[in-house]
Image 1 (cartoon, rainbow, N blue to C red):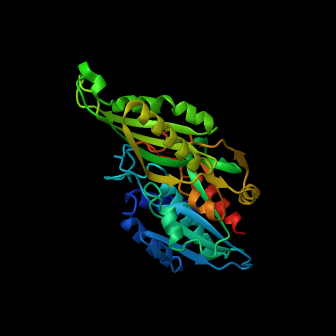
Image 2: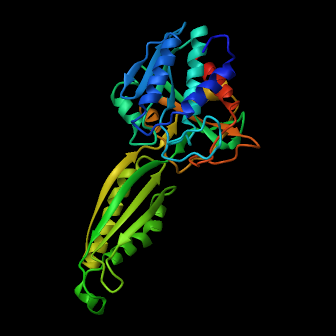
Image 3: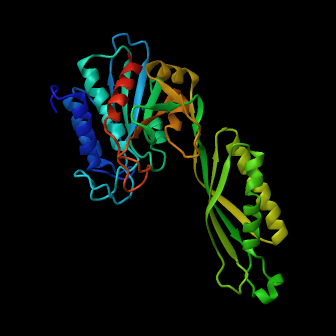
Length: 361
C-alpha cells in the first residue's frame, strides 16, 4: 500500500485482507506473516512472540511508553455474511480483523508523523484461547510500558460512539469441572447406593446462595452428565461450570465456599467430589488514570460491566490501562459478536485510529 492512499482506504483494505485469512488461537501463522511484512514495509522492526508481534517507535518527548494492543485470532465459525472477502474456513466473528486494521492504521500514521510518547504496537495472539495476553506478558511484551489501551468493536453501539468505564468492565472467570463419584445400585434398593445426582442437585440448589454470598457474581452450570440408566442410582455426575466475578478477592474465597458445600453434600449422600480448575482470568479493571486519558481524547459514554471475559485483563492487572467499546452498528449491520453473520461499518475504523493517535500525542 502506498502512502498516497487515504487512511480510510488503507484500514479498509487491511481489514478485508486480514478477514480473508482467519486462523484459530495460537495458529495465526498466515496472519502473523501478513502483519510482519506490512510492518516492515512501513519501516518498523517487529519482534515475534510465538505468532504475536510487537513494534516500537520512539516519541519526540519520550516521557513514557504507551502500548496500543489488538488481538489476532478468529473463531471456528462458518461465515454467512456473503461478502466478497468472506473466509472459507473459520471467521473473524469478534472483530479482531478490525482491531488489527486500526493498529496498522496507527502504525502508518506514526511513521508519517512521530508521536510525542514512545509507542509500542502489540499484535496479540490467542485472545479467544488460553490467555494469549498472559503468555505475551510473561515473554516480556510489557517491559518498559507505562500504559496500555485497546478497543473492542461493539455492534450494540452506533458508528462513532465510544463507551468505557472506570473500574471493572469485564468479569474475571474461574472455569471449573466438578466430578462427583457415588455408588451404583438398582433403584428398588437405592439405599444400597450413593446417588451422585443428589450431590449434584445439592450443589445446583446452592448456586444462588453462593451468588448472594459474593454480591455481583454469577455461577453457572452449562452441562451435566450423569447416570447409566433410568432405573440405576447414578454412580457419577460431571458438571461443567463457570464462576464470574468483578472483585478479585472473590476468586479464592469462592473456591473455599465451594469446597465446604461439596464436603457437606458428600457426607450427607456418601459421595466423593473433586473439582478441577481449568482456567482463571482476572477481571478487566480500567484504571482511573488511563480512563481519564482516554476521556480527554474522545467523547466517552459510560458503560455497565459485563459478565463476559476479555484477556486484556492480564495487561490491566500489571499496569494502568483502559479498554473501550467502539461502535460499529448501522442500519445494515445488526448481528451480534460471535455470530456467523457478524459484519460492521468500516467507517468506525477511522475513529479508532484517530483516537489512538490522540492517546500518544
